Image (cartoon, rainbow, N blue to C red; front, side, top):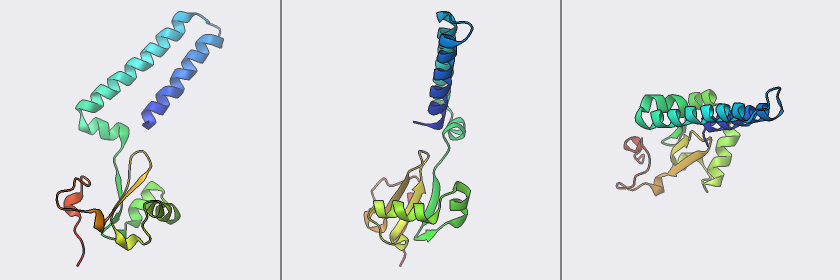
Length: 137
């Protein structure tokens, strides 16, 4: 669920609730409000599928947190990710030390995905930034 979907859900519930308990309790008011919001959601979804720049604006984009075993502190500060959260995500992926990580990415859904050097193969479709990942000598 994207942040836009959550916003739509809250707006939709508020619009229907106002139609049920507000001064105008007609069915038509609630249906018009709900249909308008659902149409807007459909248009945003279709535009996101066509236009990459618009999709990046609505959904955001992944942020690199670790690259070649080096923590990128500027990106962590920008995304408000603490070192404890990062270490917890590494432990969840079975990684004991961040030096073993080729790439750690904060995904748009808030999860942190990690790739170890051992998981990389030349033909694996690992990530959009896989061309930058090479095992250090």
